[in-house]
Amino acid sequence: MIFVIIALKKEFNYWVGHLTALKETTRKRLYTGTIRGKQILTTYGGLGYRVLHRLKEGIDNFPVEKVIVTGSAGALDPQLKIGDVIVGDRVISGNDYLESDILFLPEFKTPFQVKVGSILTVKLPVISVNRGRKLHLEYEADCVDMESYHIARYCSDSCLEWFAVRGISDLSNLDSTKVWHRNLPQVVENCFTVIESIIERI
Image (cartoon, rainbow, N blue to C red):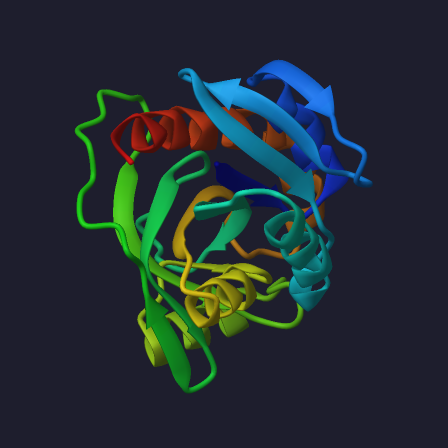
């Protein structure tokens, strides 16, 4: 079973619309469904390290073999555009990093860019252009989120294969909250396109 986990309920509401045979389980916020005939467990877990509670509950109560963390992220690489998708080959937090198990990237013919890159996990949203530039220079990361590293660390310690797929919802500017709400449906749809293709191959 593949466990797809998202931080926020609003992201999740767009996400589950793409699943078939969606069913609520007896566990709070945990749902099952299918993508391309493969069994999926999915949930939303909250921002930052709070997501680990739902992650652990899913792993402890279902036959989870692989975990995918997805959702929105802020761009650090100035070449990225709204709707582009980063498939993380590395997730970073402070001085620590983890490398993803993904060894391939399918070819995509999409109007948005799909890039293998680095994801930086931070404690607070990046809403300053200057801070975004500094983080990009310091960590050479493509985008920033608040959950990927925490999930990757837990999965690595639990000997579970993990993947991180993040869609660019804002460019780390002062209007990021308004932009995030406006761009979220397209961001989730783009992430689903990439995840669907990955799921076919894992």
